[in-house]
Image (cartoon, rainbow, N blue to C red; front, side):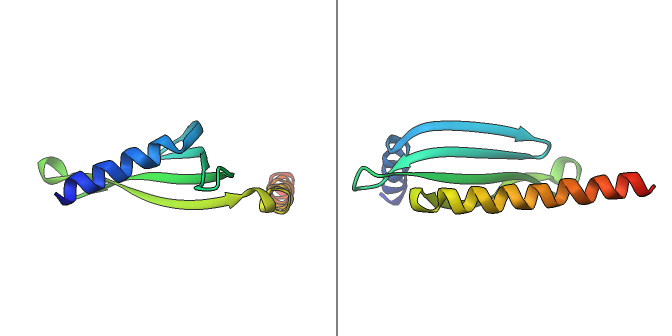
Length: 101
């Protein structure tokens, strides 16, 4: 019975996704899912999924570690400004490291 509830809940969550984009990056996959809440308002769910291998050889087990961020429309501008600033900072410092070598 519990498994049925989980499956129904997962199916309901899939129905609220109106757009999805996956980005494969090495051992990680980033999912950008645009969803609708109960009020029909859209928001962005960002999920990082990282493959984790425990053990070695035949005893190894594969699992996925997931982290989620929910980003709402009223925060888009501030989030993008902060993200752009952080990326610019990294790029500028990486360039300085490259030049000084």
